Length: 84
Image (cartoon, rainbow, N blue to C red; front, side, top):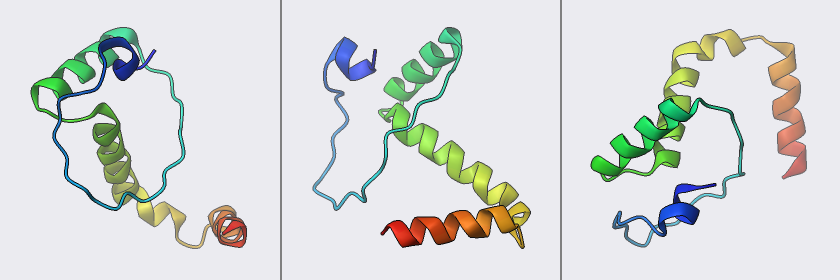
């Protein structure tokens, strides 16, 4: 169950901005880690989804060089651009 479903809308103010489309993704995480993450995000007036996106972006930035000349990555990019 999501935080919004459990506690209702968050109290994080946001202005009108164009939001690029995102796909819903699922992952598994231990309850104690998720509870701590969600509470810390709440205290910092952040959304857990944005925290996770920032973590993923940092991970990709640190390891981006692994994709250089990777044929599987290149094929996936071609497939993704063909779907657009």
